[in-house]
Length: 263
Image 1: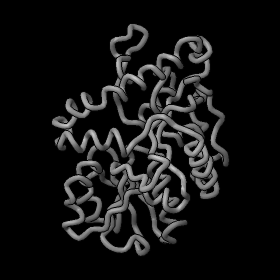
Image 2: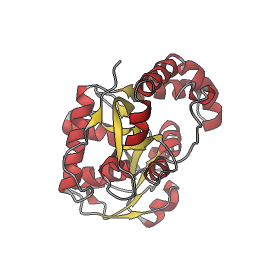
Image 3: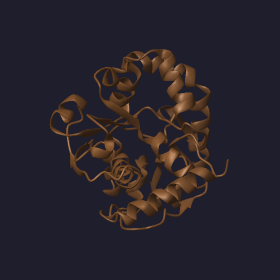
């Protein structure tokens, strides 16, 4: 998104990934970074499509951890019977359910719970923690010191499937893309390239806001998450959609067709 705020063709708003998808589907926004699972939803007035090659994902190379999508457990995750899911991202919630059922054979019940991990674990065996709170928790090591088990779900997915995990993509309303296709994909690609070139500046600006060391912010942006997606990411997305459909989490069994964006 680097530089888009200064581009008169864009008006930016910042919200949760799930709320961003809802705004697109309700017609309140034209374009947004949305959880990939939203592409399988059929609710709302507007169907969404996605742009290929750009997004938020884990690395295709091991260990493929992202540090911001964590499952914290009071005991062995295989024995979890009650799991609290953070409602902020529907994709991560689906990933947690798939891994617990298929990788760990846990017979757990899943509920939307408290985003505070200590409050969630006071009532449940395990809790999904995502985003900035998860990253701070991973960096601090507080949960491990307190005796909890902490799993990085992107790493667990990679160890299980051999594939990276895609969390979010640029989603766009079809009529908006049709009216702006001559310039919009290239502009988003340029914003991505410019942002990657400014990772050090972004880390320096955001580390104090998040309360983490600058070196950790830079590590997160340079090694934990990737934004240029390749064939392995497409394969990971296809595998995720197939598993999510088999578990009844989404209606379609294949990843949606995406608009190719030339580099």
